[in-house]
Image (tube, rainbow, N blue to C red):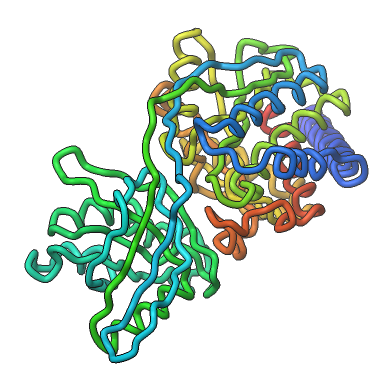
Length: 455
């Protein structure tokens, strides 16, 4: 009889706790949807500042705006962490045309963007084009077929992939490694098909790299529509391409990660980091990548404070600088935490756009997967149903090396439209849906509330 009573009391306790959780999460969603600041904050970041490439004056404006915004919410701590970041500029000249070898052929203009970190062409560069459908095809080519030409890497993202990030990952190498592999065979430049699923006129930039023992050559991405046109022209005969870029590197510059905290009421020395990256590419306005992510996390912290939900652990939101072309913000943050003797116990990143939330992925030990899967019944009414092994994020990734075994969580929104805008001029404030952005902020606030409570 005593054992039965004990079991009943334990059952009642957990029912009461779950009911309290459900009530508080409903309050979180009401605050985000009815009195939220997310959409207006994103508007200010995108429209009043715009694109925020590391090292630019607009990146510094974004740092100042973020610091002032965090101070306006009267968080327990607001601070900046000084870091060094690369400084690359696109320049003012970015042009390309191609011409078929047939009689009376006309020049056809290409929509393109230099890849981040590319060197310039030092004037107009002209050469015959050779097309490859994959990086491996280029790697297996003979030098005599490539030398002195412009390599065109035309690998479309796989539209059959349901999870679009898998399609992106399968193509990333043509952007990241294309210039190195083309240069090894004596190419004069490389142009790639933009990493995007739609067939449109918007080229997509992104980071690429060089190799110290391989000559540097210019690298650019052309729109998917132009990639199809260029490929069609090549199927009929030889094509010459004319390319001019005046992008260049400068000396590294000073910048900052921007941080705010709600101090833990029981374990203030134990820190849960949440955040995204403040920098963006220099086209569009960085609305989905990653304005939405930093605003998600800022709004989550604001909501917890507004509702008086004092965390047991310290919750720190970090706006990281330089994810796009170096990840110095993430690397130097992890080093700073370790040097300060901090106890980092978990981290979460939002860097997949401001679309409707679907759940969270875990990069970490299985015991934390068991933990977050127990959140599912409470969060399913809010359409959060993905709680699985996955990816955390670029910015929080370096914490794994400094804090072995730390769980990293990645916010998972619907991904179907993300690569319509990723690194493209179309990534502007108007491309973000107000309600979806607010739902994302509420999802992160709810997840962090439960994580803090259950860790």
